[in-house]
Image (cartoon, rainbow, N blue to C red; front, side, top):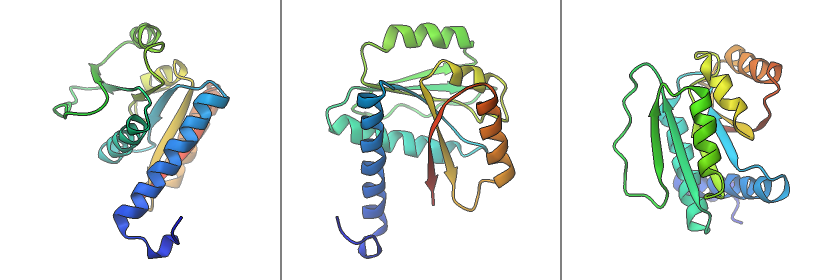
Length: 171
């Protein structure tokens, strides 16, 4: 591994994504976790989507079958699906029980499923979505996310016995 200070910005990002992908692979193998809710404490939608897509691409290239389920709220527009190595399912205002049903159908087909859920402290259903996943990954932008919002997000998830297995900070 190269010294981090000598790497270019895109090389640092690639290295970080590979590290996160490796940790997710370990979680799936050692702890049988395969359904990851991905959320934020604020409206970092683009950053969260970039992280999910980068991880999905890396995991797919490593031979993993990956699925992304994007949950939209309040008339949210979904980006046009790109030609990717992994499928993306878009659902708007899905009831938590419908997500559970969808996951029960898809979980045996895929090695890793990312469920892109809205910010936990802004949308009540987000916690219900997270409960149907094995654990939660939080994506937070460095020097953008407010500490109080982040603490409140963790508190809400912990109060509902939802496992937070990782925090990805993005600069």
